[in-house]
Image (cartoon, rainbow, N blue to C red; front, side, top):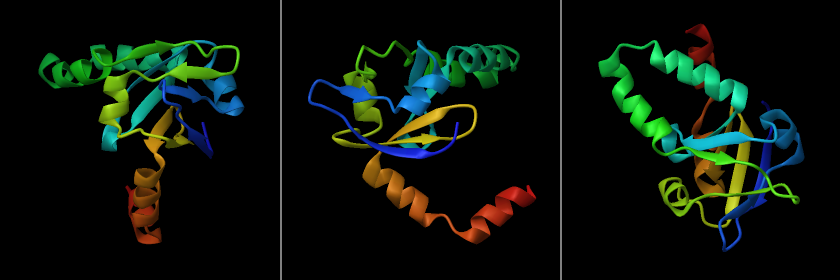
Length: 135
């Protein structure tokens, strides 16, 4: 998944998923806590792949990851207007209030507080990118 979109969260915790991401995520997908205080959204296929990968990890390493991912996950099926409901606990974790950024990050999408995303995105430099690509 690639790209970024600005969206708004309404007072009831509903968030319209951008049409391109709805297509890529599918009719049913999963949202859970992500790294860097954002939420991660996975298609059913990617969710199953990740669950399988985590189940192959040594149990001590996987225990915390399983708790973080699976205990906080919600199954999402967009309504007729393409909206999903983000539960209060997940909104609080990611500091989601009104202005939201959806970003594609390859195999999944992330949901960010727009201000937090802008700060994070603007803090990255060309040198950071080069170092990451060099491995």
